[in-house]
Image 1 (tube, rainbow, N blue to C red):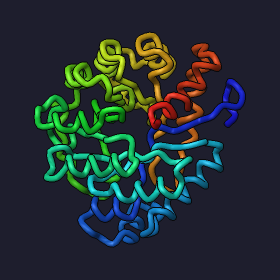
Image 2: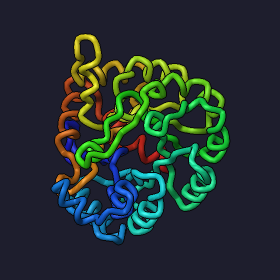
Image 3: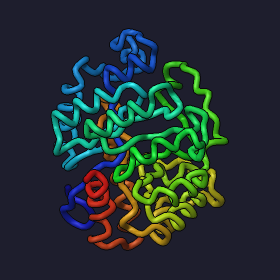
Image 4: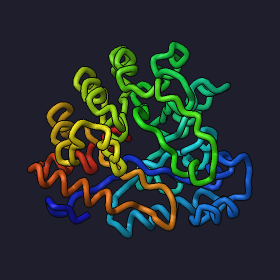
Amino acid sequence: MLTPWGELTVRDAHVHFFSHGFFSLLTGGRDVREVAAELQWDAPESEPELLADRWVSELDRHGVTSAAVIASMPGDEDSVIRAIARHPERLHGQFLLNPLAEGAMERAKAAFDAGLRTACLFPAMHRYSVADERLEPLWPLAAGRNVFVHCGVLSVGVRKKLGLPSPFDMRYSNPLDLHNVALRHPSVRFVIPHFGAGFFREALMLADLCPNVYLDTSSSNSWTKYEPGTPDLEAVFRQALTVAGPRRLLFGTDSSFFPRGWVQAVFAKQTEALSLIGVNRADAAAILGENLFSLQQ
């Protein structure tokens, strides 16, 4: 893809795979086409391979080499397993897990065994601390793989649009809850999305203390409104690079639904910010694609 540094390989670390199964699980089995019409979104076909085809066409349209796609409801792992089987060179698999649900560890093992590389945890959504001892069986399963831990402000737009309850609990949103876990499990790579989504300072502290912690740059990063002085994206990148360095930042957009598709504006804003603070070509290449590729091996 053409970037401020010339042609570079771009890989997106954060794309939600809103499959037919996702909508069915989210709404308790409502007709998916009816739900999509209410949202004014395109309804996905029942076969996840067709949605995978559409995402690959969308990536091609923008010149994106690959994307990490997330099964965004617990229980929808098969949709992403089928998607990556269809396009193994273009799509990397991630899955949302409620680690306290019945059978969660068996499902995590099955997902990892099927080729998904990243378990995504949303502690505020499912109301647990990531330091809870009940999560201990997960860490050996994730050895040599990745665990994405959503911290900070959590707002799920599709739930709001559909009037679904969001009984989240931000007491479980602090990245520092992960400190002891990350130290004890150095073979697990932990990813904090959205720079900590309002816990930027804490996310930086965690990354500074734990070399197996990565930061994902995805979304509009509107959480900056909570920071003193409301820092711009250039300031955020500059500080993240100072603390974590370029090899632990993962470019992402937080793209999710059609017809919007891949959110090119997020890419443009982030690459502009990186260029303005003087990031060199090698570091830009790492952030925009190489780091994600390494985590998927």
